[in-house]
Length: 313
Image 1 (cartoon, rainbow, N blue to C red):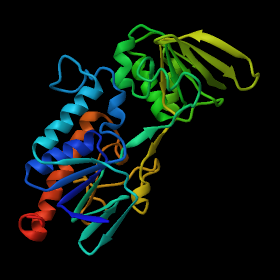
Image 2: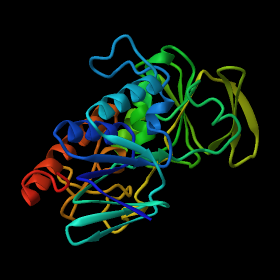
Image 3: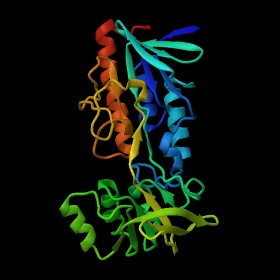
Image 4: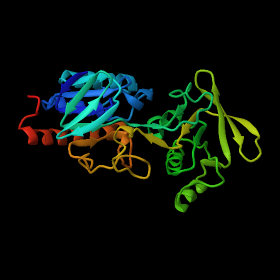
């Protein structure tokens, strides 16, 4: 088993992790980023990233992440594809265990992200990025004036339906229960919005089309009757699953996201959290990048306070 000592370990190579790697490496910290999959996370699902300041014309999430990785590596960060099996803290060092290597560092960032809960119906996976989306702000503008379906009945689904209703007069909100799971004021806004039709006791059974979404098959949960309706987009908001299993002991909010302060600090000294796995009100690439940069800045101060100039120097 190989042992590698560095200054800063980042678990997760999404936008938050790569931004943090760039800032940390540029400040002179020996930085290692670990991720089981290729870098990018949810950003890889974005077909056109058009709302990130300074990026114009739009690029795909894949192109954006590729540039981010190259930029971080140009400052000396190492991005390694490996599965993290467990994390321990012994003394002042975090021990991050993979199958072949143990990485050790005084500072660790958890930027493992979150994944949307899926309907797990035919067509959902096939049309993700081609009409199926989990982010209204990201993809809503591509469907102005189109037939838009929103799946869910909680705060996120209702908030996003209200936003999408500013883009199209044809928004249908599908909820599997007989009433929305939101406060009365939000429910009233939904009911009074002329661009939104609410269909209760309805579940999606299939998303169909050729190259793009063209229709949705809906089942009435009370009668069992199915109907197929024309659709251009299906936005799914049935919850998120934060990836917190590596640090399950940390305090979390009601959604299961890790609680930090504004410096991205957790309750464990030297342990930071950034991106979608962190408890916050707004999740976008730009907020993930901000989290990551802040974490790197605070980690750099913490590490240099321990050793004077980074322990591996």
